[in-house]
Image 1 (spheres, rainbow, N blue to C red):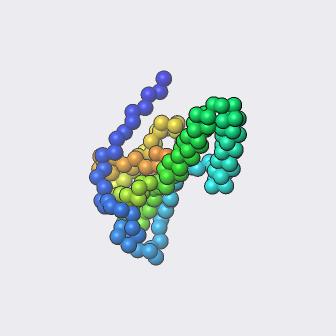
Image 2 (image 1 turned 90 degrees about the vertical axis):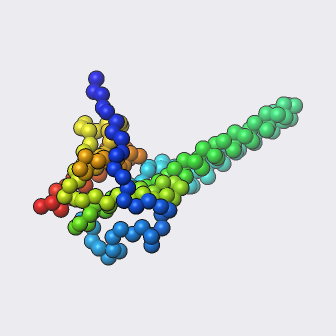
Image 3 (image 1 turned 180 degrees about the vertical axis):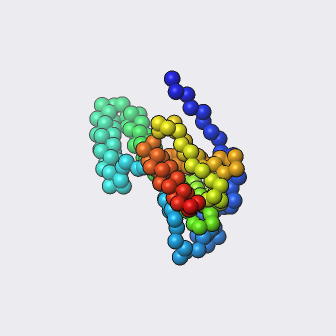
Length: 182
C-alpha cells in the first residue's frame, strides 16, 4: 500500500487583503509573463443547467405537495417547500465555492502566486524563481499535492484541480522555471 504524507503550508504570504486590482498588483500590466496560469475549480453544471434542474425539482415537489395536500396531509406540502429550498441552497453554496481561484505568474525576477477565496480575500506569495522548485507525488493520484518549495518553506497550489490537471500544471511550471533559470 502506497501511503502519502499530507504536507502543510509553511510559507508566509507576502501580501494579504481584500482582492482589489489597484491595491495588490504585483507586476506591471504590460509585462510579459514567462508563465501565467489561472486555476479555477471545475463546475460541471452551467447556469442554464442549474435552471433546468431547479425547474424539475420545483415541478416534482409542487406536484407532490398538491397530491398530499388534497389527500389531507397538508404538512407534507411544507416539507416539499423546504426540499426545494435545500436543493437551491446546496447549488448556491457550490457556485459560491466556485469563485475561488489561484493565479500563478512567472516574470523575470519573481514567481507570484495569488489565491482568492470565495469571500474575496486575496493572499499573495512572491517567490524567487531561482530558488523555487515544483514537487508533486508520482504517480499522480487524487491525494497528490502540487507543492512549491523555496528555502524549506512549502506552498500548496491547485488543490481543487483534478489529478491530471495538477500534473499538467506542475509539468508546465517546472519547464517554465527551468527555462527561466537557464
